[in-house]
Amino acid sequence: MTDSPAPAASTPQNEGYLDLRELVARFEEMGELERVEGADWNLEIGALSETVAAADPGRAKALLFDRIPGYPEGFRIMSGAANAFRRLALVLGLPEPETEMDLVRAYRRRARAGFKPIPPVEMTTGPILENVDRDEDVDVLKFPAPFVHEHDGGRYIGTDDLVIMRDPDTGWTNVGTYRVMVHDRNTVAIWMSPGKHGRLISEKYFAKNEPCPVLISCGQDPNLFLVAHQEVDYELDELAYAGGQRGRAIEVIPSELHGLPIPAYAEVVLEGEMLPGELREEGPFGEFMGYYASNASELPIVRVRRVYWRNSPILTLAIPSRPPENFTFARATVKSAMIWDEVEKAGLPGVKGVWCHESGAGRLFNVIAIEQLYPGHASQAGMLAASCHAGNYAGRWVVVVDDDIDPSNLFDVTWAMSTRCDPPEDIQYIKRSWSTPLDPLLREPPWQNNRAVVDACRPYGWKDEFPKVAEASPELKASIRRKWPQLYG
Image (tube, rainbow, N blue to C red; front, side):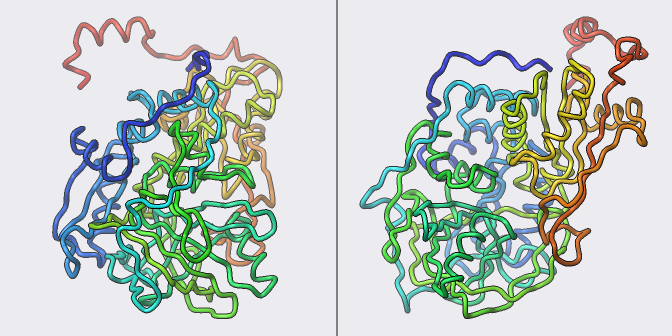
């Protein structure tokens, strides 16, 4: 459980692929991609994406759908691009891991070695400009936007997406991930949770009774998606953060209407304005907590005035559903590393691992492992993990365990909770925390929830006298694995 020291400072170089298309080829070479032909945009693609990811969490193949009924060959959908050990390591430019904690530690080591944002570089042209539909020629439904779940309110072209907006006061460019529903050929709607950066920016325009300019990328490098749906700092440029991730700048092209940065190697990008005075019904949509927790609601529409798209475009697809989902492994890995960094920066020593479990939708059940160093250490660790920026939104449980427990192993964690936690003494509560209308336990505003911090560590006062664990020693385990390797797969 020990996090090895950071290597000497160096800039990460993730130049092994140019764009999503090169990743498709690499995934196929690795045996990590399955091509699926003939699946219908209406429910079949959603159900296949959901069930394949759930059958082998963190290891399931990516799916590339083609020959979608009603659409030309080559108009494709990619599901679960980075949602597995080997593919995520490739996207992040990290060594291939064996376990969840290997991946989290590698991500952290790179960050600690000198990771810095690299601002995007502006280009005059790029593949995304191979086709540009303007005004009356716009037809969003020329792309196979899927009807994802059986009880959804419409087709969603934006799930694994980027929503790019510019703050009218500061000029800061924000990139977030929000669901995007298609109304008709040139009208979509964006649902944004209260408190999210995109929502705050749009409200600034609406307060002035002005339309809010917006770009929506519906297919792109999964590195950009990973950054867009993490809790990075307010006014930090996500495109610069993503550039730092890959070790070189993200190439962008100013959009025709509003000069917003279009990722040059994206697949399909919509441009238009959110209109505050025109409302249409959006939703419902099966969401990441695994429920239809929010009803359909009236939202400002986005009038799409430009569509930029590559030849043979690939839409990228995330399937929020009952966990495990087809994007939560990747999110859990990055979020675990971010929580680990934030609690250490707050001054907490002795952290040995963090994991945000997919069974908690990557947000609701987070575990932090520590080497107990002083009285109250476990309580401090739990409170920090529950309240830091990366761990605060829509949380429910934080469990603190000793360093002999693998935080990514639910058997280990529930065993520790069952044998080292005295519920009346070892569970604390945090009330009125930041949540979301997607929380199934919340029925009306304010969107606040309560959460528990569970101390599942040996009691500090007599931890050295706690009963010994009944388990073969690490040395004995290694010996028998070498002697009978055929028994271990």
